[in-house]
Amino acid sequence: MTIAAYVLYLDQGTLDALQWGIVIARVLVPLGFLIALLQADRFAGMALRTMLEESYDCVVEKLTRRERPAGWLPPGERGS
Image 1 (spheres, rainbow, N blue to C red):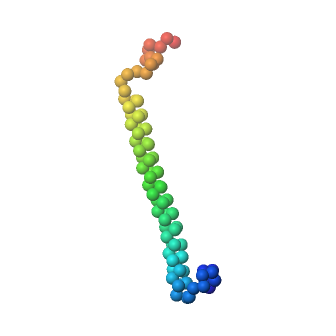
Image 2 (image 1 turned 180 degrees about the vertical axis):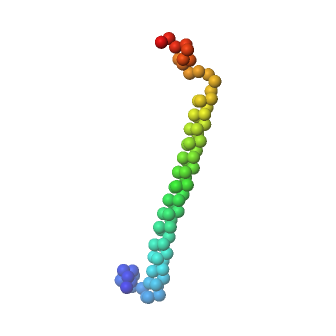
Image 3 (image 1 turned 90 degrees about the vertical axis):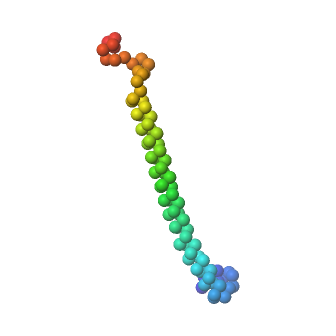
């Protein structure tokens, strides 16, 4: 006998149906958490990929620009 049998005063057929509902819920809740973890992992991977692509583009732009930064002198023109 289960707690539901003591509290609800139901016949055995109804209790068997309730037990299957509990079993199904106990299976589906961990599966839901697993799906949420997989979705979070996928989102984090996409965010990381986007961040790396943007930072790569920024570095490439800085390294390939033609103008010199303010105050920069070639090694032969330095005063020391």
